[in-house]
Image 1 (cartoon, rainbow, N blue to C red):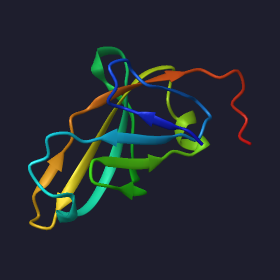
Image 2 (image 1 turned 180 degrees about the vertical axis):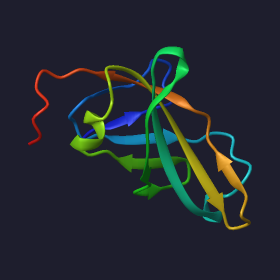
Image 3 (image 1 turned 180 degrees about the horizontal axis):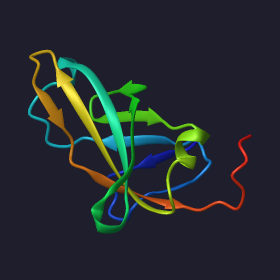
Length: 117
């Protein structure tokens, strides 16, 4: 398993059919992470004319002071087409306030064989 840091200057890369852990690093929070009631991460593939082709959400596996982590399965990454995807987390606070993170992009690389192991 490897991680993908989504806040670097270049787009991080994951391969279709892999099982990465996506880590979103949070900056400049105006709330304490202990106030987070729930969180999920959404993934969206954008096609021609900005049409959303695929969207799905995953629950967060780890929520630390400045990092949100989510694991993707082989089936999850095979849903992506080659190119760029958008990733965004939404946090719901105890106060019922909902805070989305800035959307970021991940580069999806192709694989030669789609068989699942």
